[in-house]
Length: 332
Image (cartoon, rainbow, N blue to C red; front, side, top):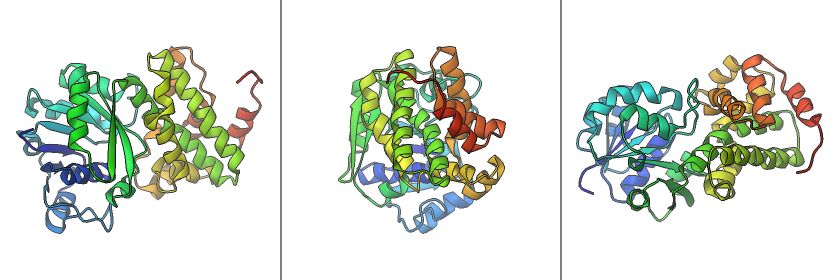
């Protein structure tokens, strides 16, 4: 591995992932949309807005110029909000090296097309599946930046390329596993955001551990149903990219989708919750695309349907929970 790694996106996960790469021995250039964020990383060795109290290694530099960031990079990590990927990548693709590995940190389904992020990358950058790697798992950025032990899944149809990425992010605190089930890993990451919104609503409504366990378990069942319909390996959903990611996103107060769900559960509007959280809750937009994907494949996803109604149709979270509980009984 001769070049550096470009990380496009300087949010909490982009910067935490850049730190992992640097701690594993790679030189990293982070692209920040706002010049002041790039300046903070360069000048103060940190990103106080997204990762307060964390000092970034010296192998990381930053720029507000994406073309500079990707020039000569053998690996390009995409860490932008999922709904902005297509537009951004269309601008960047001409400057990315022809044989560079493209790594997706994004957990979402594109609105309108219902495509997974790896599909958007292949289509927009004009690259084959074996050049796109997906990283997914229970990866709460502040904990990883603080070097608390964590694991993740590195998925690619080409296991050799997955192994190269695995080696680039293996540290004493971060343990990556390879997998060739890209569909399962991406779906697990996208759907868990929506389930975490429902979980946050339940927390805000004062509902207890039985309700929370039900949402995680039935949420996982919905994810698996859709995954199998799309050709994923059902075992993936029992692993880090499935259950692991779902548990972390639901149970942690620092998980942005859960936090966003709590605001909605307290009766705040979508706009009020957006102002209060100040970060992208991917599940809010993805729930529409996941609902469309499920309907297109004839898959029942009642939790997703109710979250979509709360987020986009103004339904009351209490009514949504009542509707979930009053569905026709059936075998598990």
